[in-house]
Amino acid sequence: SAVISQKPSRDICQRGTSLTIQCQVDSQVTMMFWYRQQPGQSLTLIATANQGSEATYESGFVIDKFPISRPNLTFSTLTVSNMSPEDSSIYLCSVPGQGTDTQYFGPGTRLTVL
Amino acid sequence: AQSVTQLDSQVPVFEEAPVELRCNYSSSVSVYLFWYVQYPNQGLQLLLKYLSGSTLVKGINGFEAEFNKSQTSFHLRKPSVHISDTAEYFCAVSYPNAGNMLTFGGGTRLMVKP
Image (cartoon, rainbow over all chains, first blue to last red; front, top):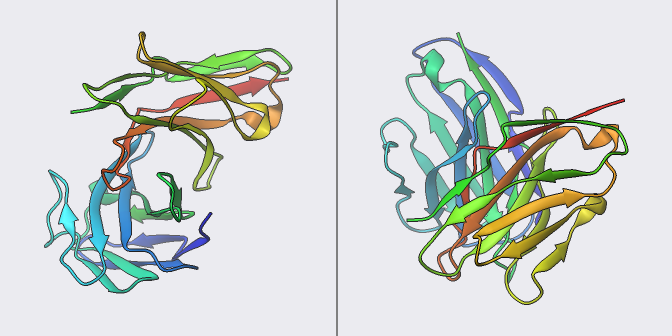
């Protein structure tokens, strides 16, 4: 399994500001995924981030709101832009296991927007 | 399109009692099936998975699940729960060779009471 870390683990932000979340993996992976878990709800895929190409966003998510960077095979960032209280969620990154069809998740970033 | 339904949003159970968390999926093609657990204030941890072969799969912490193709179900069971099993449990599916993208069910909160 992969070891995944995220920074920050939690943050409280003001409306209208932006927060960049970092995801670091201990091995090289082609694909990384970003999910959102709104309070009391399940996980929803935001986008798939492949190194060397633009991220692919799911329906309902746009690059202007959630820009993603993927500068190398072990790192990615997700920015939550122009935040509103509705963006209060846990944001998780995940990666596929080596040679498997399993995804492994980071510990998540708990974001509260006031 | 695939979808996942977890029929129970909450399951209260007494310690040392058996438990079954239900998961049904819909898909026109074969899928991979997963159960993840999320302990309070933590990320997601893989409990078990079904890719192929034996329909009864065993996971960590004494959990097991049975794949039933005719009923399109993948229910999670444990013969005797502990207080420490209190957590949110998510069923998920993915398509083989589709980049590991997961579709999650709504989650079931297992509450183990003394």
